[in-house]
Length: 142
Image (cartoon, rainbow, N blue to C red; front, side, top):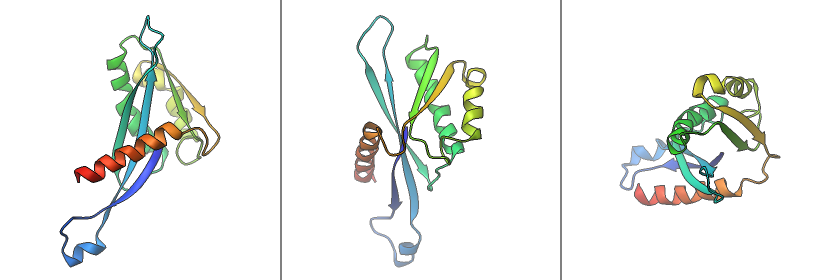
């Protein structure tokens, strides 16, 4: 899970006053790696969440996980654990809000969770690259 990119939105044929009214969006990329029961093959699902504004806080992270966990449970109905891997900025992942979220994960989502922290800025190449690809696709669509 990673904040990939920030974008400023503007209209293709904007009027002059719209020049000063750009909306910003943030792309949050999540890659779910999994192995189905009875298989040794590791598979993955890519997700990009487009959020208005530039939210980089624990509540944003929890809102994203609240969308991802049901999708994981649908994909793998017998899943018992989720392992989150992120870097460790205090505002997003390493604070009391997230610690409380993990402590109550089983009660809220019905499965256990463990949060794993990487050194800040290290080892997130897959999700960063995925978010950039999503941003390029998003730019083409809009």
